[in-house]
Structure formats: structure tokens, C-alpha cells
Amino acid sequence: MRSLKVLILEDNPFQLMVLHQMLNAFHIFDVLTAQSVDSARESLLRRGAIDVAICDLYLEGASGLELISELALKRNAAALIILSAATPQVIEMAAKMARRQGLRVLGCLSKPVTISGLGQLLGAFQPCR
Image 1 (cartoon, rainbow, N blue to C red):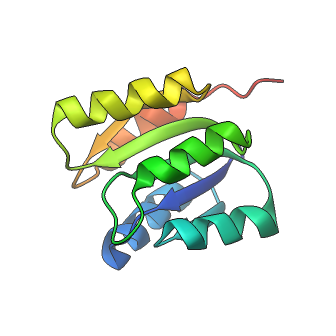
Image 2 (tube, rainbow, N blue to C red):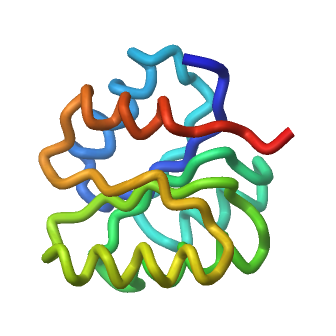
């Protein structure tokens, strides 16, 4: 897998760690992790724009939708992977919103995430250069 800069927004510490390890298995080591929208904002301010955001929709406090909108507005991400245990209708609504705002949606990962599912979505990412 090519070198990518990825942000994971996931409020469950175990799932966050598993996703991080899966990315490392694909030789993706430039990974920003955040358990809250505020933490994700701080990481983006410090480290700059990312290639791919992996965002959980349901978090304690602010919704992942809030960060998705900000990523699109500020052009801080080239692509998005939605991470959720939500209903297909909720996921599709989030994907449509992200696309309307200019984000490329690579797809959705349901929980628990599988390494093959993550690999397929990451494999679909083509940087705009």
C-alpha cells in the first residue's frame, strides 16, 4: 500500500487501536488518531491535511457528521471512509451529505471492521495529483 496520511475518528479505544494496527499492516504509518471531534480538530491543526479520514458517525458528544462537514469545508481530506454500526439509511444519508460537500466517499465499514474490507476501500483511493 502506498504512503498515505490517515485520520481515524473512533471513540472506542479498542476499536481505534485495532484500526491503527490494520493500517500499519498495510504499511500506513502516518496515522492520526482521535477519540473525539475536538481531538481530531487539534490533530489536523498540528499535522495538516490528510489523504483519507475514517470517521465513526456515533460518538460521545459531537457527531462524526460534524467533522465530516468540516473536512469538506476546509479541504482537509481528499477522501472519506464512513465507519458505523448505523442503519443503511443513516449511512447513505451521511455519504450523500459528504459527496454534496465535495468529499470522495470510498465506502462504509461496518463494525467490527475486517482487514479485507479496509484493504478494499483503501485500495480504491487514488490521490489527485
